[in-house]
Amino acid sequence: MKASINSVRARLVVTLTLAFAVLAFVAFYLETQTLQQTVDVAHWGQRFSAAQLVKLYIDLSFPGEWQSRDGFLYKGPHRFIDGPALRSLLSDYLPPDTTIRFEVGTPPAENRKVSRPSEMFERLNLPLPLSPPSDPSREGGMHRPDFPFATVSGVGIAVRGKDSSVVGWIHVESRQDREVLRMSRFRFFILFGTVGLYLAVLALFGAFVLRLTRPVGKIAKAHERAKARNAELASLSRMDPLTGLLNRRGIDESLRATEGEEAAPSHVAIIDVDHFKVVNDERGHDEGDRVLTAVAEIISSSVRRGDLCGRWGGEEFIIVFRGLDDASASVERIRSTVEAHTFGGAKAPLRVTITIGVASLEDRNFHETVSAADGAMYVGKREGRNRVVVARG
Image (cartoon, rainbow, N blue to C red; front, side, top):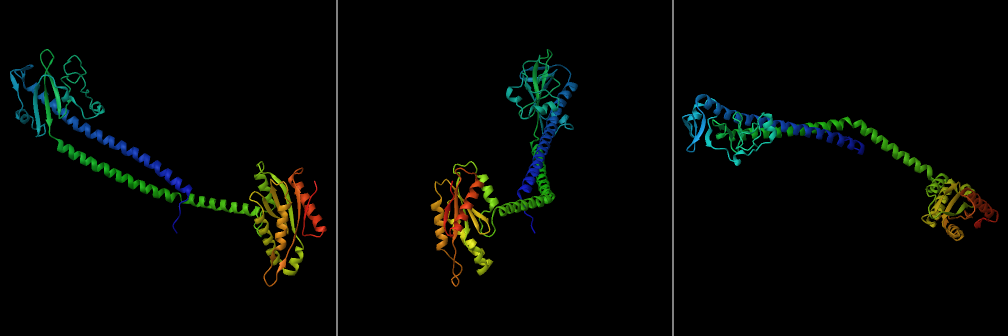
């Protein structure tokens, strides 16, 4: 049989699964950030190393000071122009698609744009490309000769002349976009694979929690059944099982529950079925039960919504009227209705009458009023039954 999921179990499963999902998301985010930073550090580290390598090779291989003449950069007597010559000398250390350019002057601002966060440069222990290129006095700036700087399409490194002023810069660019793209795709697959793994683990975790909470579900079900049973027992303890009316306990509890309401109880009527023992003796107890049930239906259909009616015991009934100046007319209608009603079957009709005693709560509490109404009812019995008697104040 398929187990159902009650509200307690559902809340537990949802809470634990959401908590696990949040932890998984945080772990996934940290992993993606770490992977992103690792790729960035490796990529930019290679570019920076290439620029430093080019400048170091020139410094060691060509003696003299850096200077600019006629729009070209010179190192001593050697003039440097764009071309594959220098790259071929460093072919064992640079990617084959590396381009080396020699620029005169300071790099313009647009060549100093950075597409990566500053944390990446800090991880590489490199200065941020934010210092003005024309200010050589700022030792922490981007144009210290031992530090390269990032550009839009590659990496640059400044060169200084005899007076330590910037005379130009070397731009090293490698068309490694295809490699970067492949790395990005590889990272993309890794990330989606990780997401799939997390989803699978999350599904397994949810299934595990469902299985783990089976006892919780059973306990919650048992609690709900016990609660429903208790409510049913509480209802039965207040109701008369034969007539469906309130019993004595139900009347008392209803009065306490409505205590303080605007329409307070005003009158109590005690009703007794006349010669009921004769009905039981001559027609049997089953017929007597049917008579009691029919009288109960007449009483309950004759009172107002706010009034209380119940079985007081045996063949006696009670009505608690609210907000009436005089209850005599109401109980007289009930008496006449019962007198006109035909009980029993068509083959064995039966006539039944009732005697009613009525008392007001004006100067009495409830129990005193019940006693007064009961006394008035017995007065009616002695006077010949089938009548309404009002208790005197």
